[in-house]
Amino acid sequence: MENKLSKRLGDIVTALPLKDGMRILEIGCGPGAIAREIANRFDNIYVLAIDRSAKAIELAKKNSATETESGKLTFIQSKIEAFELPENEELFDIAFAVRVGALDGRHPGIEKASLTSISKALKKNGKLYIDGGDPLKEISLKNY
Image (cartoon, rainbow, N blue to C red; front, side, top):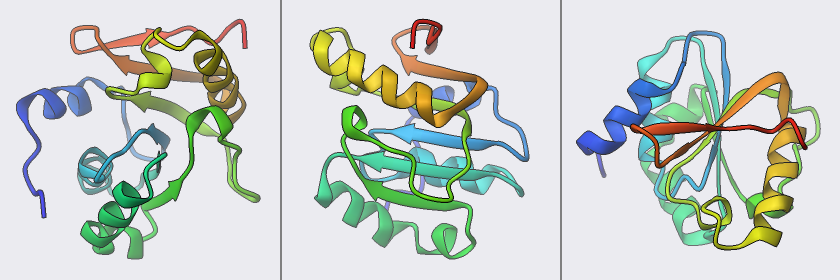
């Protein structure tokens, strides 16, 4: 099980404007390292982490039993371009993605569908961050 984040991923977590009481959507969580780190840094935070890979979600769940049992972390297998907020799930304050092909500009059709899905999952003033800045950049959702 991965306990220590790389410096790059640690810098990304630190750069996110996180605080207690927030609801966070992680897109492309892989084995769940960042989601676990966020859940463990805060007393009162909730992370919903999604990934298109069933194998990644299986590994994330296996490595995150403590955090999921605490109710601070949930994993769902979903492609972001097809993601819909689960029933009874509240909107999120922040969404972020690290190394997610659907948001890196190479697939405009998928990217548009993805940004629409993300926009629907966020609160009115919700923000989306992706890697590629220093270390993050905010993506505007005003057209979605």
